[in-house]
Structure formats: C-alpha cells, structure tokens
Length: 232
Image (cartoon, rainbow, N blue to C red; front, top):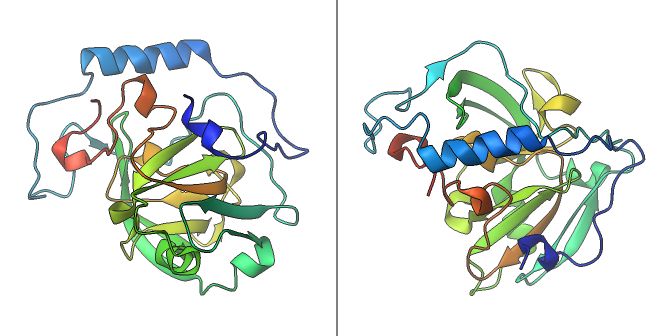
C-alpha cells in the first residue's frame, strides 16, 4: 500500500502548483545511488567526534534539490492539518499557526547527496508545540509529513521530540523561499535533510513506520548522518 493512502481524501494542490512532472532520470539516479552505496565511506562516527559527518563536504551556498515540482503556496490560503492516531485531530491556518510561540534556532544541515551547511538561522514553531497540541496516542510511533508537492516522509516520534526540530517559516532572517520549501518546511537537523519535508501541509500519526517516497526507493528509514544511514 502506498503510505500516503493513509491521508484521507485526494492531494490538494494550490492554485500556483507547478505541474512539472517528476524528473525520472533524477529518481533513477538516486535509486542507483542507493543500490550501489554511493558516498558511503565505512567510517561512521556515532559519537559525533567531528562536526562534519563522514562522506560530507561543507558548502556555504544553499543547494536546491527537488523532483521537478515547486508548489507556489500563498500563506493566506495555507493550512496545516493533522490526524491519525492522535487525541486531537485538527487544523491551523497561517495566522493561528504563527501564534504558537515562534522561536529561533541555529543548526547545521546535512544532505544525503554529500553537502553540509553550518550555522543556519531558522525561525519557526517548535515541533513539540505541535505535539503538545495534537497529543499522539500511546500506540503512535511515527508521523508522516506530506507536502503540497505530494511527496513526504515518515519520522519516529522520538526524533521529533527535540528542541531544535522546527516547522520553519524563515531562514537567515527572511521568509523561507519557495525553492527551499516555503512557506513552511520541517527542519530535523540531526538527520539527513531529505527527512526535513518541504511545503508541509499534513501530518498523519501511525503505529509503525510506513516509510516515505525515498525510503521506499532504497533510502534508510531513519537517516543518521554520523552513522552513514544513507541507504537501507
């Protein structure tokens, strides 16, 4: 079963949705990378002795990676909905979301393709503020994050209950750009950056890990950069 069938109803696309299809060559290249273990060094550093995870190179730019679709989402019409195994299913529009106590965090990010960028300044709502509102049920173990582009990923609740995990609205003092997932993206800095879903619109709580788009195409289900959990 496609894990996104767990979301009720069809994928809603904003009026500005870019209908460009998924890039099949890019998908094939990433599947090949998973099959061959591209960029794996065999030098895992689970104790995090170094700031730069194994197999990574530091950059100062902010590379843009996507599958060919960059939704144009107007904050005035944006909303975040959640459901599944939680005690308080619900919805927030942009104004209500931004009343949940935005904070600033400075974190590094690490892309599975091999680049890392240090000291990114984010502003957004802590994921714990959402979890406190949602109240996942005892049997819930994971949350699936789905974006306006139709793609998404699943994360263990334990990985979301960290003070530096945000639903980010701003980067480096400005609203998050469309190509980087604006108006809102997930930021999970201790995992590879594909786990930080862009253009977030839905969260669905599940028992067990159904995976996501890339996890079901050869990528690791967790993605710890220091353990080199690129694929699995």
